[in-house]
Every structure is written in C-alpha cells, then in structure tokens.
Image (cartoon, rainbow, N blue to C red; front, side, top):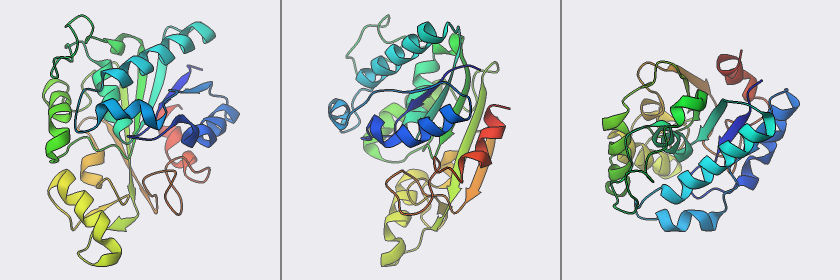
Length: 233
C-alpha cells in the first residue's frame, strides 16, 4: 500500500493526529504526519504565505518515499491542510506573496500523489485574510483538477448555523466561508465549502470539525470506516 501523509489543519500540531495515524497504521496503511507545531504556523498569520508549511510537507513526503521505496504517496489534509495540499500538487509557481522565486514556489507534487483526501476543508472562503491564498487555488486548480489524482472530499453534518447563542459560532463561520450562515456543516466548515466539483464528495452525519471538538470528528475510530473505503479500496 502507498504511504499516507497527514497534513494538519490551521494552527494544529502533529500530536493532535497521532490517534488517526495509529488507526490507519493498524489498518495496514503506512502513515506519517507532517511534523508541525503551533509555532510553525506563526509566519502564516493574517493570510500570509504558506511556503513554510509547504516546505515541511515536501520534506515529509520525500522521507516517506525514501522509507517505503515508493514513487507515490496519498495525502490526507484536514481543514486548511486540504487546500494547502492543492497548492502543493500544482505546477504553477506559488509566488503571490513575493517571498520566493518561481523555481522555489513550484512544487509539482501531482506527479507523485495518487489520492488527495480532504476532511472538513474550506475550499472556498470570503474571509479577506484568506482570499489571496484560496483564490490562487480556486483560479489555478478548480475542482478536482488533476484527472490522474483521485479526490475525496469529506464534510460533516453536525451543526446547523443559527443566529442564537448556541449555534452562533457555526452561523458566523459558515457565513464568512460560503456567504450563508443558515446552513449545515461540521461547526466550522459548511458542507457547501467542503466539497469540490468532480471529486467523490461525502457527507457524514454527526461529525464535528476537529480533534478538539466534543463528540466525534473525522478521525474518530467510529467515523474513519465511513470514508476510508471510498479512498483506499
């Protein structure tokens, strides 16, 4: 089986995904996590360049390829990790922040990625501080862009956004992501933003956004079987 690389969500550390990685390993999938810490995200605050994160992803992928003598890998991106992975796949230089040369900003990982699985990823956003990055992805790599890569996009349907205190966070998060607050999602990412045109799009009930959530999240042992068979049959 191809090795799996887990890409943490925004401001999440690798340790939050250890249980997910262990479950995948127990199922027979060699798995590694991009070794990010909270401090690694600090240079990206305010919608700045994701190059520091992309470099960590690239190093982890190359290490896994060497360790398992594999020409290809599978990627699982949680939350922002999913759209950052789409930058990593591409051959168009990611130079929108002016911090790297065209050669340094060109990753072309689509050549050695078989599958991209996104879990609760906001593939669109109306937030001013994320638009520069997400518009780069949307404009250059719309939908399930590379036909030789299988895209699987998983959304959770756990919280309905409503303008009352109990669902206020979800309402506002959904609204600044897709423009509609009164909709369903995982409490952070609305379903409409978590799916991509041309991908295998899944919606799982009662699944919340992150490992920090109360209740089940995408990486809970009870939830993994509901999406993994679509990803790695």
